[in-house]
Length: 315
Ligand SMILES: Nc1ncnc2c1ncn2[C@@H]1O[C@H](COP(=O)(O)OP(=O)(O)OP(=O)(O)O)[C@@H](O)[C@H]1O
Ligand SMILES: Nc1nc2c(ncn2[C@@H]2O[C@H](COP(=O)(O)O)[C@@H](O)[C@H]2O)c(=O)[nH]1
Image (cartoon, rainbow, N blue to C red; front, side, top):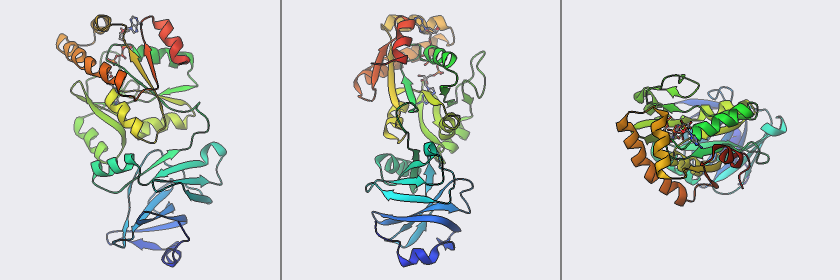
């Protein structure tokens, strides 16, 4: 790490030009990781959240990275500690203890993957969670296994403790599904643009439609002080596992394939063709769920009450 080089001290509170734009920063901390110097502070562009700028020391060019994740609010007194070559710890000294510890990922696998996907420089914030109680919970399992039923019970029984992450999807709403409550029903091109702009924590093509969890969907729940529940497929779970969210992962399996088929048909929300597609996809999803090593708990949903009890107290 070392001290801030003179160049940075001269630049403090001044405009920094990277050739295409200029940004002013204040209250910044400076750290050197790998071949970059990072400024972490408030910028005239970051609005209400702490901004990040990087100086590539090999090219001497300033970079304004795409910043992913739930961002910490600006503060006047922050400290930065390098944890390793991949991430730094940022302490908001003037904040309440539950909002004081933040991690900024600079060069983790998640950041490298996102950087490659977005073809630009990326960094990612995550909030330090004290204890396990507020860790988000990812629930996956094949279509029709009962994820939504179990999650509804949890939300009904503990409305102040859990909050549902409302996903975006390009699939058409079902009868009595409300926009903004069950899903944010979206146009594909809008979703694709938001994905490119780094607004999604994860996304996947599921049964021929695009589904995804926006960073904002998780933020809304965290801001309400609730534990976030994500109902997403295994592809999405894999992406969240690789992200800094620090979630718990639960896979729901059916007692048998025949019972899964019964439930999917009995629900009556899909055409026969869609049921067939979902059943085909269920085979691969169950295989991956049981063997991928992504999941902390695998629960069988045979008797609903038994499964619900296990969900509340997974062993
Ligand atoms: N343990 C159970 N025993 C019998 N029926 C169940 C059980 N759990 C859920 N069901 C029923 O199975 C159907 C599918 O459940 P649900 O919609 O919750 O599945 P899901 O996993 O959320 O599906 P999708 O991924 O397609 O949204 C529903 O009609 C629900 O009432
Ligand atoms: N990767 C993601 N998968 C998601 C998300 N939201 C829902 N899903 C999964 O899609 C299927 C189908 O859902 P349905 O509502 O059309 O029946 C199901 O397995 C969900 O878990 C998401 O944001 N990302």
